[in-house]
Image 1 (cartoon, rainbow, N blue to C red):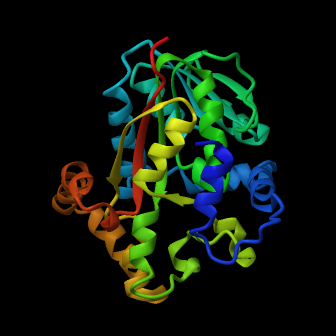
Image 2: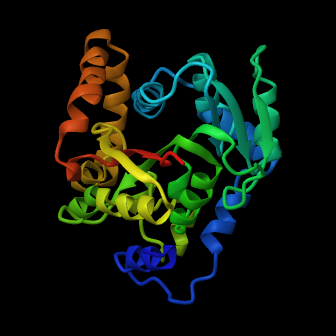
Length: 298
């Protein structure tokens, strides 16, 4: 199925999307972190690794990547920002390159290399500055959902993979978003995510969502094989919980979650649950998808 058909199918699920939509979300997202001030603010916001969000979106994510790549394999971190995933991949023994559209972000990353050898490149996610078949693996941490036209990015990433190489992405789960609508509207201010492309007021919080089936379609259109698309992250960023609790309730929920994570016993349970239970839950119960695709051997 052509990429244009996939985009049409995905947009049909969104509410009140203009058929002649300008690329305002894409442009807004690309420009959002280019300034030095924005990069400085970002590195502070993501600097805390003692939280469940980091465990789910970095620790477990890197474990998944290590299950498919071995030490010395060359992996590209797309939209690397200030290096949260980049450093974790390097410290896991992989050869790492990083790419981001923001030179300011990369400057922050360079200042924190601490002796690590990592190649850094300024580049656009839709037109990456690398030869085809350059990498054993490509990963992005919470980057693709920024863009409504995310299947185009998967095509571009697939071209940069070597035959047999793996693509790793995390994404918002459309089935969880649909489940949340049974409980009512989501307060974007407390939840932090807006899944409605037409919501101009919350464009900065826009994150695309897709189902496991749609990930399979996108992989096939890009000439890739979908290896798996597993639910990930029950406790964090769960749209159904956010809708059920409302704005104030969800803010309180996040505070309680953060406080209990500091208790060793509660932390051990939460991490056990996220590692072993969340991937086995019915897909609508969990807000994230950990997606692995593979480029077939030549």
